Length: 278
Image (cartoon, rainbow, N blue to C red; front, top):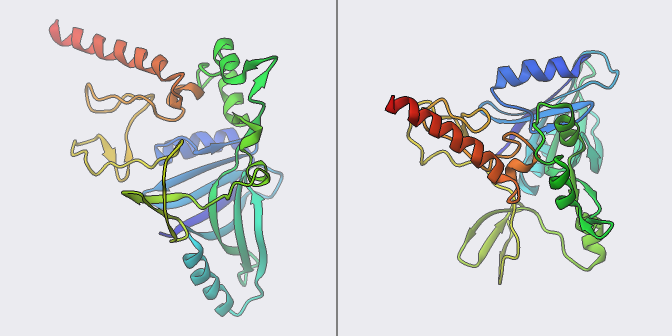
């Protein structure tokens, strides 16, 4: 399914992030020192802002696609627009990899198409001084520091994942075939984003998900395809969440750190039940 992409240059990133977060009722999907992005489902848009010295205003517009078939369809439309097409090919831009083609509209504004294959990750060392770096970060409090604190914002901007061996080029050097993301599975048959299907003998590790709110029929619990919550607490009394990415800290979405949020949510629920008893 296609998604509109809008990129706006701003002068004050922090203030703009604050305003957009209130407008979208969601925090940025990606947050860097000079860039922020919201992947929204309602409206279905990839909305990005950046503060890199450019004049404030729209930088470019685009249509984000999911697979090669949609890319070729939109590319064909660009070719029929009777404007010169700039083909960038596979490139890294705005902290993600994509394959891009652009044209300029009569006003000189860039319009293009781009399929993302995921957020760009910054990989770091798996071990330092013989100790696992995730354990070090947990012991030092970096993983559990609140996302609103200075340290928490820094951790979020850096977005480092342990494992230099997990970089795509390292995987390819090791003889591993890198495939598009899996979008569906039935039995042992997996369907990938490019439409191809493959039989899978075993799943060693799977990560990444999209929210499914279709099974929740509770007023004010959801909005479109997302759950309504702030720091895991829903507007619906006694309905809470744990395990959400950056719910309160980097550790929120990690197995090693979810217990911290669970303890906070438990205390919140206990307090609420105490109020009812009173």
